[in-house]
Image (cartoon, rainbow, N blue to C red; front, side):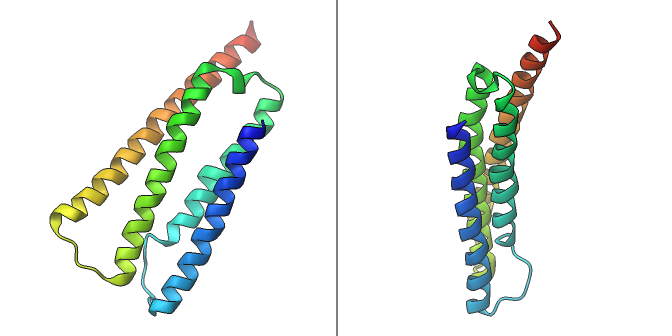
Length: 140
């Protein structure tokens, strides 16, 4: 459970840094439009901090943290979520600075973000399988 608490804390710290950076960077640059930079804070807070806090509560009453599928979920999820957030950050900074990207650079950012979403999706499917195996043990 300590590992889950540490993950939650790390995501919380980066969520706060992301929120402050968004506010200060857009203010400094005089940017008033919409930017994906505003999503960094929320994604890290909900998909990182809160999700792992829920896992702490769930692991207290189950054997989930020792489940092989859950361990695989943790690895994949902690690759996919930071990658997705990095791409939100990159896209947001580009929007605030009003850079004109080439089609290739734009596609590369979208492609990497898409890969991150796929990794998170696979991780969540594995999480559901882990939860299903835990619940199946309860029923027997």
